[in-house]
Image (cartoon, rainbow, N blue to C red; front, side, top):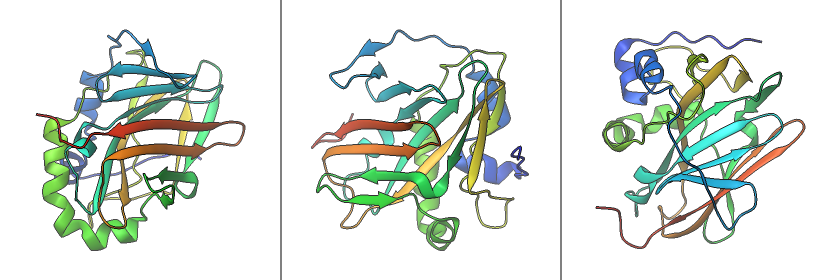
Amino acid sequence: MTQRHILTRSGAFLLGITAVGLLATSVACSSAVPTSTPGIERLGRYVLQENTNRVELVVAYKYAAMSLGNEWLILEVAATSPVGKTARLERGKIVLTIPDGSTVPLATQKQFGEAYSRLRPQIAQANIVREPMNYFPPNREACSLGLFVAPGEGVVFNEVSLNDRRACQGKLLFRIPGGVQPGRYVLGIDLEESRIRIPFELPTAPPE
């Protein structure tokens, strides 16, 4: 089912997913550098990409690196599909492996809504420091991941439909037991025909 979202201006701004912002950053302008993990390329200091046969996904974690000790970890994500392919990103199949080796599921909309009053300033700050996610062809229609919506601001869905005509952006939020700690994290997304595993390191000191 094609995903459609109705967001008010304030809700869209807080989640960093306005259509204008998406369209303004839809021109690819990066030079990818291979990492020590096969299939993972670095597009910037805090930006990584993995391409599978179904999904091309970029994750940015600069704000996460600034969030040591926080209860919530916030990632910026952009996703599309290769030419002629489609895919579904399902909330229940998105997890984060944290430094102690345990896994944390993507937060539910209910959890997000209950914590929203505390999360709102963090989301606003994440929007300020967020990396431009301009890594896909400019002819792809901008869309929202829409996995999280400010309470009362619109409709949320538990899956995102991707194809080669759409480039979707948004945030992934995880509630971390004991707070965000430095160390190795792995974003994991299971798809119908492939899987994504993107490791990233949060330093002991936040970026300046």
